[in-house]
Image 1 (tube, helix red, strand yellow):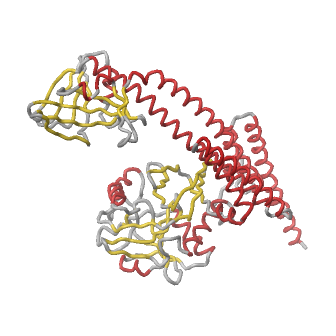
Image 2: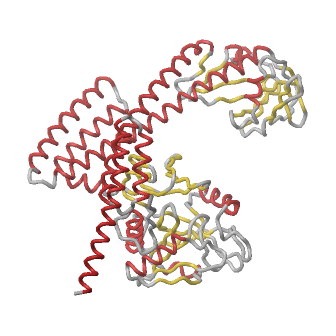
Image 3: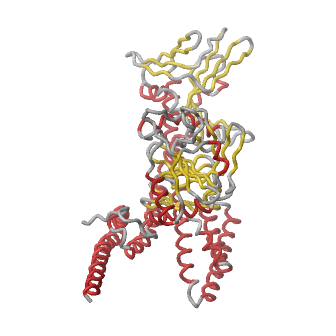
Length: 569
């Protein structure tokens, strides 16, 4: 009886504690709702984020906060779009006010982007003259061209501009220069983009009212003085470049804002559809979705055929099609959104067809099949993608990242520099990362430039390399614990010889950002090691390991004792 009383009292205490956490979390939620209603969206985000941080076990309040966050982010993006529209209109007016001062040179047959020049600097007006020419393309990228004409070559690759008071600016060696001959006259040209010109262009803009001496630097030095019209050209083109580059930046931000807003509309649609399809009136709602889909698709298509393509019209068309799919095949919608993944603590950016996550000064490349849309929540960057995480290809590098008795095993500060050249070279060669072997014997697996290795044997044992010159990763330690205590797998930390890598069933890279990035193939100087898990998707063991650890991080799986700290106010 005594034990029952103690158990009952303990249960009451826990319930009271839980109720107390929910009460405090709900107070934060009410503050967030008030901030949202008065249009203070940043404050609303801050309050919702604080619920997640301060009260991680207040699940009901966190769930309500996530729903409110969707509304907050939607309103914030709508507000951002309105501001960007206004800013773009203002810059457009500035552009229209001065564009007639310039001449646009563009061959529509061969050029997609033309260049604006000062009228006095067109090629036909400056034959047989040594001068600095300035131009800005329609996307706002300004450049300077140093042109030399003379009886003999000087082979110049850079220029120096000097003001009367002795101050000067000098370009680095040009990355784009060439020489030719016309009627026994030697012609040399060298190009310098704004930002890669040693601040020469800005220096000329600041000193546009002063006499400027120009020195062409090569095998010999040629000196001349800028004409007043050339100084005027530098200042005028610089002003135009500032306006055009600002317009391009606004257009980029508008596109991102529209993408995020469209994604939230899709996410809201999915949330509504998921709830509705669970009810008995499923058929009725499916008919309703079909009706909306037909109407939305038809009206959007009419707008597209009548007025042409635009991001907004295409978005409406896609939403209409999604309504149709939700009405016809509701399970397909759920399956599609099940591919949504979360990446922690990073900032997402795109370069070409590659997706990167920025963690501090480090860029981590993620190899996804195709990204459809992304949406930012504070603390999370959600991406909507096709096919999920795709295994990457790495190479065995000839470089050493760390040596015994050195400090390189701790990847902090300048220790990252040891792998920068190697990773740049790997990307040029088409590889995602480098596999570093031990510096002493080059027979044992160490790590990559930004992550630890984790292997799975054919009998599902987890193996990770042991070495004094690799980072003692917290993520790796967490994965080892989860594998042993949650999944019941055998784990082993030992020296891993490169010769045995071919015998493993799965391979992955583990770290804070990606948790686990699967490796499908290792290139050893032309010889390939292909893992049985393949290049299509993450292997089954690593997948389960990834899902379990991220579930703990997300709060859907109970965390081990001591992993989560609750901070009371």
